[in-house]
Image (tube, rainbow, N blue to C red; front, side, top):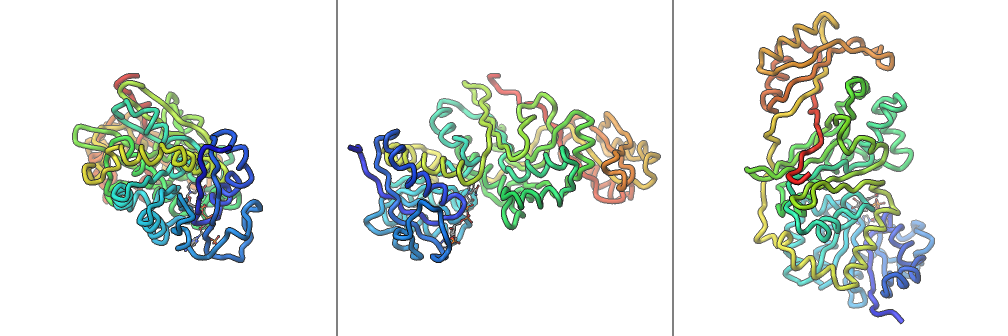
Length: 440
Ligand SMILES: NC(=O)c1ccc[n+]([C@@H]2O[C@H](COP(=O)([O-])OP(=O)(O)OC[C@H]3O[C@@H](n4cnc5c(N)ncnc54)[C@H](OP(=O)(O)O)[C@@H]3O)[C@@H](O)[C@H]2O)c1
């Protein structure tokens, strides 16, 4: 005898939706034994009703009519369509019909979170989104429940498995960027159009979601500085490796005296950094709380199975009665009270790695270093760099700077290009040590 029955309607039955179908139908009895809940998937709305679905999702519950999710025989709507147009309508109309909502759609939350949270709170229903950041890793619940006693000073993450896979494969297997990305697509890690992965946008969507949880702010998405991995060459990874650095696409949130600094950029990690070794499709997120110190989540983030695991945990949380209560109680989802804020660029100085293709090859090293020094950048190391794997590209000059303000660095790089010292736009990225928590 189950304590409570709940009827789920689901929009979308693709990679994640099929996984949810498996967990709710194939594993129904095991889930009931574990939770004391009778969770029934009663309707699945998709676009193409002729497409074959997960073997466990019966044809009888499939429909092409999204509006039927709002009928009285559905208690809770799971949105797994993706995108920000139809998905927004599905979520807002479910809320208007008095349904709790579960979504894994980070783009929707990053761009329309305040609108959705306000509508849900006005309707007295919950919106849960554990699957939106790092798939199966319990990051959202970890922060909202496990770390709620803390003032979060900072967080950082490797949040996109495709980028991490590409960077790892380039270095480990010596592949070009294009070949590593093609492999990620072939293996099903990347989107069919992987632009949102490699240009950093997907990472920034997740960063915006985490900023709401960690800092209670709703970042104006368009103001978040975002740089993807498209300019990183194999030569950078090889040079960094020689210097003892690992390149990762990092999402960073720091609370500063002037507000939150949020940004996404490729970064070299020093050997001591806790993310070193998070390779391939791996994801990781660290939080630095004033009481708990450093806490890190690490594992295979996205994918159908892991993300479905997170989605079903939200469904259970709602069925248990906790999800709606938590969502409607916590002030960070009260968008009237919470700050809607522009994200700031980092203001602390950092060391930088610079790589440029120089006219004159090795002979140009001192000239380029002197040029940077002339622009106010203290250069710690400057040398020519070649490697058999990139021999065809000729000789590069690589430099390491002392801690430098971003604005000074940017001006110096602009000067290098204008002065003709570099034959193409130099690549520069920060070098990051582990964050020092207020309570390490
Ligand atoms: N894939 C992952 O590893 C992962 C991880 C974390 C979060 N997410 C998020 O989870 C969500 C779903 O991702 P996914 O990878 O499962 O996507 P997907 O494989 O592309 O599946 C999308 C589903 O939505 C349906 N759909 C699309 N437009 C529709 C419309 N206008 N009306 C009705 N149905 C529509 C599709 O129907 P048809 O099948 O009929 O075309 C399909 O079943 C996204 O927000 C994504 O960002 C995904």
